[in-house]
Image (cartoon, rainbow, N blue to C red; front, side, top):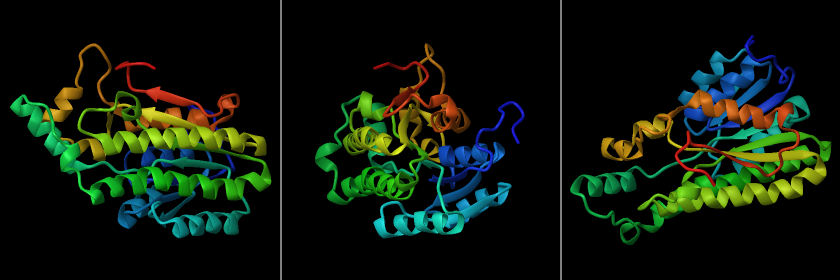
Length: 264
């Protein structure tokens, strides 16, 4: 157990999506270190199995959040085994590496990026399917199992892109802005049933997704006046705060964790 942080997750049953890497993996490890039994879910079977093996009480689940029926099955499996779900952290999400390349090429050439006119339907739908539809599937499944017990906490991982709406990244910005609004609307409904829903909105964070960001684009995010890229562990700490007892008065909050790049 993490001795610096006394556990109030002892005995809790938690499900973390996107747990195969990045923020999701960091959340799964921290929840487990503070006493939770963690169901780690990810579309990458090998990655999530490796993370689950690290956890004292960890279970791996292969899950594509874009598949509604599979999401329902995953939540049902947790309830079948334990009768309840106490904590959900929804960290699964995707970016668009090709669009990032187009933006980086424009930066290097010192010209405005042109992305929207080139953006195909499948690229748009892929991002929306995972980031927005997936958030709906997960929130719906969570309420189906948590509301009858009138207990539970949910944290969704959004993005500061919903606010700064980076030029040339319309589908990602839209998907995250939609996920924020979705989470806030659900939060207002869910609290009447004893379920708290909140969102952490990270800025640039050192994850596998960030590692795929072209160098020119990474440099564009650099600013000596603010903190460098966050670590996945730092964002995980915000998620655990929102999921924990110290945040009992937070409902429908979107906590912007971007190191001081801007505020809203």
